[in-house]
Amino acid sequence: MTLIEKITTLKKEKNAVILAHYYQDKEIQDIADFVGDSLELSKRAAESTADIIVFSGVHFMAETAKLLNPSKTVVLPDVKAGCSLADSCPPKKFQEFINANPDHTVITYINCSAEIKAISDLVCTSSNAVKIIESVPKEKPIIFAPDKNLGKYLAQKTGRDLLLWDGSCIVHEAFSIEKLLELHKKHPDAVIIAHPESEAHILKTASYIGSTSGMISYVKEHPKNKFIVATEAGILHKMQQEAPNTILIPAPSKVDNTCACSECAYMRINTLQKLYDCLKNESPKIEIPSNIREKAVIPIQKMLTLSA
Ligand code: 13P
Ligand code: SF4
Picture 1 (cartoon, protein in one colour):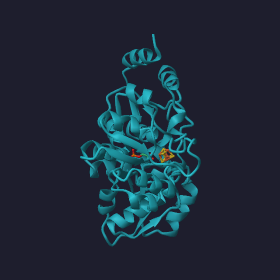
Picture 2 (cartoon, protein in one colour):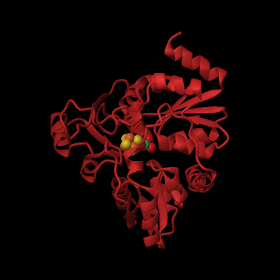
Picture 3 (cartoon, rainbow, N blue to C red):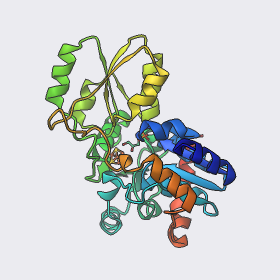
């Protein structure tokens, strides 16, 4: 049997479901039961009737699935699949930041650890962030963490004065504005689209800013057929499938043209072989101490209710 056949057979035997993010390798996306953005994946995890959830994405995503399904087995192909943004917000330091600003409502982007979620009032993703911020009364000051780029964008979009944590994503900060403008000169007919984790000067050039799913829908529905895409390059696989007659150009990164800077090294640490192994061995399992889980699940559930 091929590896793909082995995964499919084992998945049926174990009543498992494979959830994958758009930044996974295309072989993983093709074998997954569902591929989506962070919000859609959280919703799928919340609705799942499977006994085992194989989360092919990064650690905070699998952790969210476990928070919503404490009695189920949740496995991640490689436990080292972290996230630079989540790492940029250590719980102790963040607690001090909250303590120094006690009157603020704390909204955290889903790209953070369960410990951070446990000390947050609300969680959001890039596709529902505006809605979540607008659910907080206007007179209430807000802390937004950990992504400063997304935070700046949201402050502008909602007109709210957000107190930002200084975190960022290494992949979205690797795009070069000079090279992007040069590329656009060569392809003036291309529409620039960007993920809001990108820096402000990149976002300024974009005709559309949104989550990974939002970007795919935009390309699919747009009358033009050429796009420069500023987000992790894994998205191009699904985007091309959804919009087959479209020319997709990845946004260039700051370093040389040979580097895979627009690939998230954390996401790409997962492989088809590791996916099979984690399903077979039911390991590495995501475990969250119950005192953290009980607190961390509250802002996630609030988010799901607000974005239903
Ligand atoms: P989305 O929620 O848009 O899929 O973003 C997830 C992510 O990690 C972006 O870097
Ligand atoms: Fe984290 Fe950036 Fe990778 Fe998304 S692309 S998982 S924010 S490091």
